[in-house]
Length: 439
Image 1 (spheres, rainbow, N blue to C red):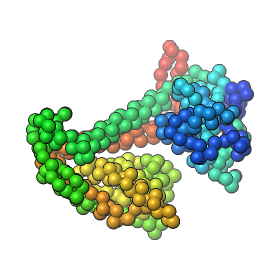
Image 2 (tube, rainbow, N blue to C red):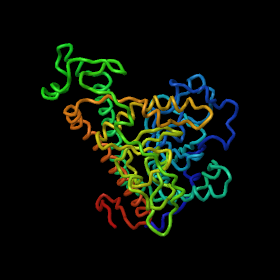
Image 3 (spheres, rainbow, N blue to C red):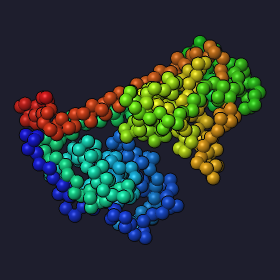
Image 4 (tube, helix red, strand yellow):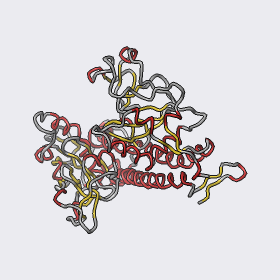
């Protein structure tokens, strides 16, 4: 029975002699320095490499092979369970099958398990649950440093069902995780499609160039192709399609700056999560501050809104983390004249330029100013063509938003199921003659 399952320390579940991470703060003189990382070599994973249970190897910095050769710790194996324990606490992931080598930095611990006693996907699910996360918080409350020492991690406890039950619990939760991952991959494809269309229409002017060359524009029906001109005209930006106009970014959309929400403290009435840059980067409101919901409606954020952080870490995102309040240093981007896809992709188009401007402010926190929005230019096609473009681009954006909202719902369901599965409130039958779930 679930109530009779023992609680054991993590240390008791490790493979004999397994190293679980870097020694507490003592990395030796051979630990790589920041300037040694590049774009080729061995992926070097940090807490930033973990998000929603997924391990982002492609986005990790690289350490040259000869520099990795001098290290005697931190190399991963498939099936290792990862936990972030320094600065960003409590992110979880599992190392998949891979070729080559993988390294972790000091913000991560790996747990190499005794597979006869513990199933990796079960441990990762348990790590993500409230019981374990509360244990991490309790350790944090007794330390002056924003980290969980390796020695303390070894003594943290988990509920240990029989191995068959672990696998059954992991399988139930894995269905939800797999759908969340499928949505993520679908959205990566949809985002790439939207950006490719934007590049073709507004940067490379492929349909116009095709018509100039006497070719049929790729992927366009006859009626749509006819809406593209077959000539260029001069503009402040150089040649643009005939009949198109150049406008400033802030002429095509309203960039509403957020409020100093500390001036709207939560009271006895309704409250909202405060959406700051940290929430924008995470994509959710977990751990967010609260403020009064008594705000002008334009400062309330909803799923699908375009948000742009103009200070510190400059990002442009389609927000899908639930309702919240717009904090200062964030723009909410809306337009009464142009569709969402147009405002989102044009702001995104200028993001690298804005980041360079912000990086040049050496004496202050990097940011851009209103004048930079005016200086950034947008090319606007004639309305009939814009309407046809919208019929193609808007469904891509809408599906991205829909998939993200669905994934948030699935993640919430997963987090609700885990304690019920562990407590026995929902029971999984592992006997093949009585397979199923009850509760």
